[in-house]
Image 1: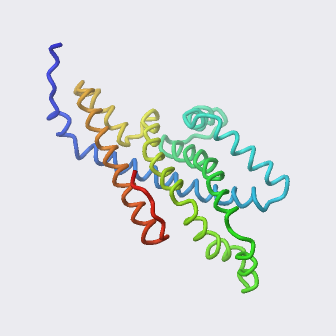
Image 2: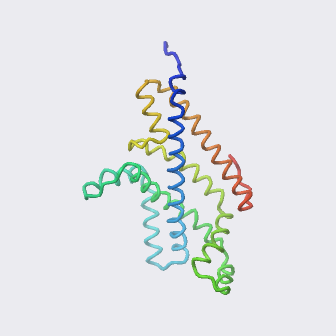
Image 3: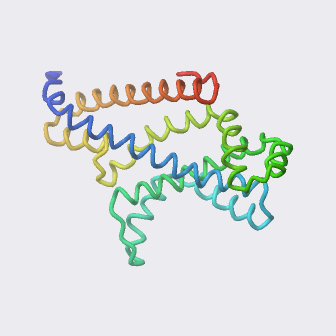
Length: 224
């Protein structure tokens, strides 16, 4: 084997890769919070909704959790144009990941919704709170504290899962790594370095989420 490693050619592009890492975090952040809004509504609907509501939400969850996110985004990006709906790569990826995350978070948040005691909700109603106020001031703090660890793990999973965007020419971390390796043919060096960047991203996200959990929700969340 006469291959000579040269990481210098890749490290010269480190600012470009870090820009992709920033976009990776943005995609994960938007996907998580967009999915959380859908998931919270779905979880409440499954627990307190009528039969039709529960059936519709379950059908959504079953579909999006039993088909690959890649297939869902392919449909948005390649199939919808045949119906006259054109989406740019990044919006297509974000919509696909939000819908996918919403399905998974529906089941995760459902466990938190079930854990809210009926007496707490009745107390809120007695105090004259609206349904929105009950969700915000009674349910959400309790849910966040109860299922904080699974939510944190899911965010880290989204950070890694956002690499799927590279297949649609979105220049997040993996997309930019593909561009670099195609130009300089230093595939081993390029992907070794971005593997390290991903480790750093997930490590930083885990520490940040653990600190937020400890000091905001009084949850002892593990870093790893």
